[in-house]
Length: 466
Ligand SMILES: [Zn+2]
Ligand SMILES: [Zn+2]
Image (cartoon, rainbow, N blue to C red; front, side, top):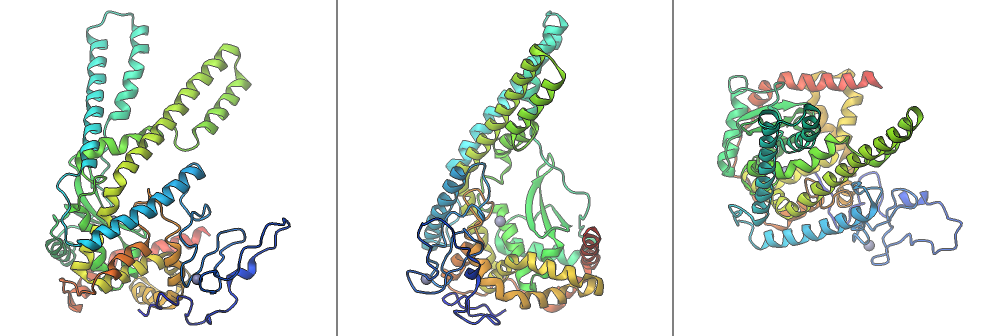
């Protein structure tokens, strides 16, 4: 795919350089404050403005691109936290890239200090859970308190057990591809794992998301590789190998958020939030108290208020705990993401890695295009149609790539695509170690044919809902 050079990202077909583009939408404000410049103060290029009032930036020299933009940055409860997370994310990306560029071959440490911390927290939580269970057993078996008192004393312990009880997740039943059903795909995954120096995933399965990932699921925490068929279909073949290599890279790159031993510490905050009703705890507490006030009288309402207040406090505490754990773990986790990208470069090659990022940047738009085409094609045409859409939409790439810097922060699971591409572009261009010929790719395509049809059906299904 032809990618316009970064230095001149608006020189794309159909849009003459320097044309009056998006900023004509600016509505003059009635205040006397200075109108923002429409040209870049650094290089005089026209600035980009996505919507009135938002923060403009220069697409040519990236002036003002790396600023916190509440309209684009992930929402983190308050602007203050969001802005801090955005800035911290930028610093982290810069520092991590510097480190990795200095020594791209460095292996991750066996156990990082962050992992040790999370391990300690996990151990404390496990002990807490065991103590609560022991206390409950004592209440039931050994204590001779009246039943009502025992029940009241049991409630806090039950809550502790519920909070600490690990949730392992489930290995999906739908979409599992056995070696017998898809021998060529399994062979490819094995080869990628071997070249990447990672274990082979225990389970390979397919779903209908615009995504791909590895996870440890079930009480045995088996490694599961999930391939989202829509994303797979729209990637060029070599980019698919890069996608696999990145995901498998996660099985051996020292990400503290992905190892079994830290499960308790990294999930209990989120579980506390879910157990106490999810987002917006105070709004929920207010509403509950209101409805109590309509029905009940004095003491009853007061008791209700106290209970709901405690639940909301527990919710905030859980959210804060999760944010803190993630904040502590993020430097290692971010480094692990970039390492997975380095694995992808080594296994699949620089160019296929960059193609996979570009496809990810355009994925929503390509899917939208396929949605329009879906009634006129069948599952077997999806790939060719997606490739055409990718070409057609490539004019959006430079802007989408720059925008990816504003849509990621410290807590995003992956760095922005632009950051990831820059690291690989800064390293020498390499060919991947993996070679898969067209005959093998065609066999893999045949194995996945039912899933392409399922993805096509999903497109037709979503049409009906509109
Ligand atoms: Zn500029
Ligand atoms: Zn990743």
